[in-house]
Length: 349
Ligand code: SF4
Image 1 (cartoon, rainbow, N blue to C red):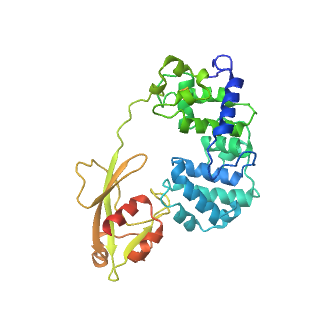
Image 2: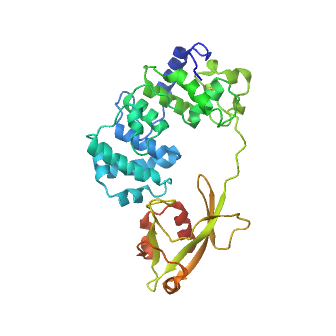
Image 3: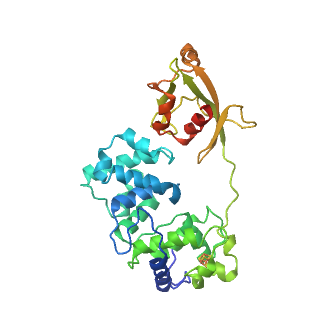
């Protein structure tokens, strides 16, 4: 659905001027963001964009610092041991991101002479970079026009243009509207993208937007109608499927605990974890006594903890196929476990 500047009812030049002026004064300081008048570092922008996928700014902060301290350049990250990268990523979730991050670093460092491409299509060919990240990297790292649309920006567009069609059906329309304000506009595209992100995070918030502080209040059609807090509308969410299984706490005669590196193609692939049974769909009517619950994006999981001795384990109660790694209690904390298994450890200790 094409939207021209004339039928989006917003004076685009005035809108951009206002939001850019506001950003100059109110921009948030973030560890990965270049300061005013500094040139951004594409490596930092890319790293933060991958970490920020599905994860909050507050959570990402310390991980970003840790990564750039340990691996100050993309060449350092490319040469790092994959298992070490997975270890440092532990706790951030969505572990496929870490595997792709490492692969992407190797391609950029070794095949592209350490230089990220600036075009979205070329960026999207790199592992872990999709539609959103490619737009964001192009705008922020290279100050090139790109239509950067995340959840915050969808919300701002729904309100600015008073769109009542519910999410997610309205996504395409909101992206087109956002494009009518962003595409081909060369006045500070990087600042513009970050200005919208900051507006969404601090002023045009999901609940109780602070419209009286908003630099673009006079462009906002929902505000004019008094319905801004109802937007964006959302379709009722379907209940998440539930899965169940067992997790084994196997100890040997030295009181060490058995861990395994998980297969690349399963959930939490490439990470260290405790052995588990298959996770099967089922209803959690009651939580088993000794168990942990964890929410993934697409399902909720309950694992019942089964303590076993090595002798029981060797009798065939469970036969993990991967190389066993026996770890003493005092060293478990150094493993960098995904949250699911860290919850089991916490309970068992
Ligand atoms: S006026 Fe209010 S609803 Fe409209 S963009 Fe600004 S903060 Fe959001």
